[in-house]
Image (tube, rainbow, N blue to C red; front, side):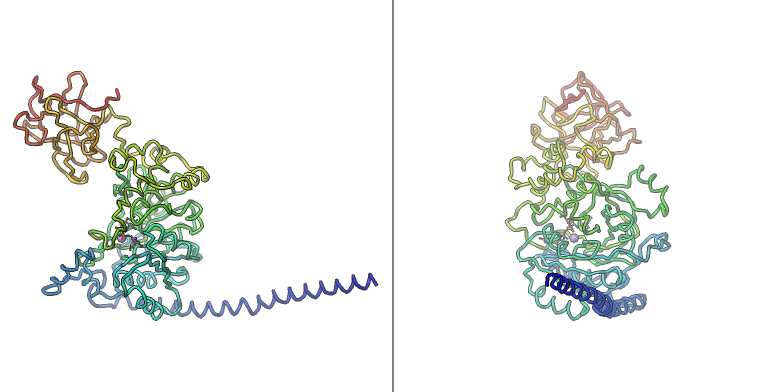
Length: 569
Ligand code: LR7
Ligand code: MN
């Protein structure tokens, strides 16, 4: 009896086992196959569409084709000007241009000879938008579909960050469904205004391709843009990559190519800056294959346009979800990528155009200074003692509430990231620190007048004459100057220069170590500031002061006495 029962149950097991094996075989043979058949069909549609666009592109004609400018005249011009303040770009010109216009191939010749592996990871292109105008948004989507080989384009996600413009609701849905019935373009919507940082996180979470590529909602991608990004990530999944950003003119929508001469930097006020590719990086690249178009290591990125392995993006902490609306996330992801073991690179052979607008065509809920508060979070989590240099610029922010950063601090610990000093030493050694490795820094004061040298709010990227203003006792970043070990009187990027004649003003312009007219001597006993080349002294220009320090023959007078706020030697 017992034996029989055991035998019967083993028969059941064998039957279950057989059923399972048959099931697996069936799935392999038919189930999986039918899925493949479906995919093949969709892929066929996509390949056909791609080939059709590619072969028709050269013959296209109409306004703005090949990225040419659209110039409006008469009544249209007047209308466009009325719209300008609201849209911050020429919407009428944009609306005249085909959503599928061609753009010029601005790549370096050398790019066209690079052969990428046939097997590349697939991309989810995430385009976030809040109240974007119709034509730039859809032109972005069309350009991605038309210029990305279908086998690499897993999907395009239009991530609507709670727009309230009517046409971005049903109309957009219908347009997308009828234009791309194969489903390659998808719309995902947030249920509240998230701001661009959380919107990107939502887009990344919705994505299922191997690689994430983020774009702003007013871009056009260039020919061959996607392969160099996917190829490099296949080579090294810890790279975060930016295409080279071309300029789409906000007035004429002209697509203009830029060269590959710049990398990203930052101001201590935590705004992004462009700077020339440093020499050490040029040297490193020269030794690489395809040297002139090889990836360029960059300390930071502008923010909107980049690619990362999807899993890696989340491994290194995606974004700080505590950041609101706009600003700061670009430097945060840059510092974090480098400090936590990744690399940030610009890819010269991948070109994407972006409309640079004059202002934001959307509201900031609560009128908050989101760049300021987001940057506080960035400084507090990632910049260690160097956050002091940010607060020098933003004393107004001291004591303001920046929310809870404990999870980001934990992330930094968990990933065992380098210090900010490591980042400065290894990734951005050119970065000038106003209060380190200098003889003296801070306010430069003429005690008898209590006037201090002052930029008078002028933009340091411009050339201007240094001014004078009543000393603000360390409260104004406009009065911070440093006397460097190289005898420069300088700010972050600009140095004081002078023609060296009696009465010449002190002009702030891009530092240049080769320039003898940019060298100054100061000793704290005599308290003079001497222009080395001419031997003249900086003078507050006495009673006749016109708001500018100037060079005068040296003499024993109060108007030539200067003290620095801090002396380090
Ligand atoms: O609340 C918002 N929700 C959104 O979805 C606010 C904005 N957005 C969308 C918006 O529709 C757009 O697609 O976010 C995107 C970026 O906003 P923009 O275009 O107003 O920003 P920007 O181009 O002026 O600013 C740059 O810096 C930002 C800092 O937060 C972002 O990182 C932007 O992506 C970034 N843009 C670029 O890097 C493009 C190249 C510019 C350069 C140099
Ligand atoms: Mn933008």
